[in-house]
Each structure stands twice: as structure tokens, then as C-alpha cells.
Amino acid sequence: MQINRRDFVRYCSASAAALGLSATELGALEEAMANPAAPTVLWLEGAGCSGCSVSLLNRISPTGPTTAGDLLINSVNLAYHPTLMSASGELAVAAANRAYTAGGYVLVVEGAVPTKFGGETCVAWTYTDSSGIVREETFQAAVKRLASRAAAVVSVGNCASFGGMSAAPPNPTGAVSVATATGKPTINVAGCPPHPDWMIWTFVQLLTGKLVSTDTKGRPTGVYSRTVHSRCPRRETDETGQFGRDGYCLEELGCRGPETVAPCPVTFWNNGVNWCIGANAPCIGCTEPSFPQSPLMGGDD
Image (cartoon, rainbow, N blue to C red; front, side, top):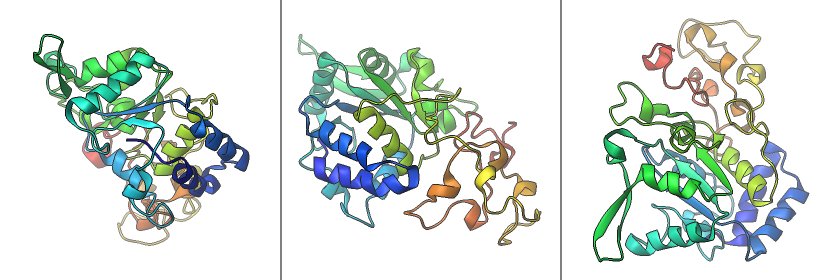
């Protein structure tokens, strides 16, 4: 399964205004995707909820391409995605292994990596070996193997970036971040889930051969540069100790905006409809390594 060049660039154009993506960068992306030697993308899903994939697909509804099917046909770049690709079984595994043999691909990982019981709590796929025996490759083994030949590893969502919900106590599967599992630095597109524009911005930089600068937590500084509170329209308003009151600062209710780095006040969600604080819900800090261990989520921060 691959992504149509024209539709993918059009999709990226829709995200350009929110994140400052220039016409020059979009033109470079179009050239890269028209090139048969453009980087291959492998997208693996581990211990998580597929919410990051759903978030990415939700961005396409208001403007063309208008459906997931419109986006995911006649494509050139996405070689493997376990829930979106048309191939299944050993055909799908073969697509991932062909990319592994060639090397130099962009590895996108969604979900944390379980490590307990030899990683057997999460299996990436089954395959038939040269002796005709059907075997399993754990997600842990697949991620480590594929990361070893990747040009870049992108952790999409907080589970892949920092462990997230999947690694929350008592964490019986020993779930860890992709960086911890592989020992390699990762580009962490944090969030639970991350906004689709944050993912697209990162992919554009990588597919056009640009260096992605990151902060000390591995997050792209082109996206994660300021706290939610610093750009919140309620930051200078009176605080409230009661839920459901429009226009008041929610810090007294446990809002994590002052210590959470994310552009939510700029990008909004659901195609610009609203965002957590706009709906009178405190920020829960879902782009931070501490999430979900916060008072709001019943943890001890």
C-alpha cells in the first residue's frame, strides 16, 4: 500500500498554514515523492490503541482527499502499515522485509514495546521460515531489527515516545519506549494521540531530506517549542475551582498547560473545531514523558 503523490502533497498543503510549511518545502516534497528512490516508510503498531493512525486519517475529511480510500490508493511511499495496507499475512510481512533488505527507510512506530516474557505478549507477525515452519516475530524483535537499518526512527504518540498509557503502573508487560527498546535516538511526535498536523510536519521534513532538530525529550522543536499555557487565551484570566465555567483559567483544577509543551492553542483539534481547554477540560499533559502519571489521571506525578 502506498500514498498517491498528488493527494499526499495536497494533504500536506492543508497543514502548511498551521505549522509554517512553505511553498518551497511542499515543492521539495512533491519532487521527493515523484522520485522512485524516495524514502520508503514502514509503520509498525505495538502496544497501543491505533489512535495515532486514526488521528492521522481524521485530518483528511473536510478537504480533498475526502476519505481514507481517497488517500491510500495509487501510492508511492508507505510500504507497510498493519491496519491500512491491502496486503495481509505473509505478503504484508514480505513487503516489510523487502524494505529491510534495502535499508534506508523511515521507520514509524506507534505504540510501546512490551519486553516481559521475551516480548511474547505482543507479536508483530507470523512467517514461514526456509524449513516450512511457521514462526512468530515479537514486536520487540521486529522493532529492534527494523530500527537497525532505518535512516530515521519516528515514535508516533506517547506510548512509542515515552511508554505512555501502555507503560502505566503496574505495567505487567514491561512496556517501554522505542528508544529504550532499541537503544537508538528517536524523533518523538508526542501526544495521546498527536495532532495529525504534527505528524505531517515531521514526515515532510524527513521525506525532503531535512534535519529535524529535537528538544531534550526528542520532540521536534519545529512543533514542540512553547508551553500550552504560554499561548493559552485564558492565561491572564481569573482561575476557577469549578468545572464547566467558560473563559476561566483552569490551573486551579489541575491544568498541566504551564509545564506541557505543545501547539494545541494554535492547531486546535478536529479540523480546527476546538481544543481541550476550549471545551473547559484542563490540559492533561499528554505530550510529556510523565503522562499519564498526573493528579488528574490518578497517579503521583
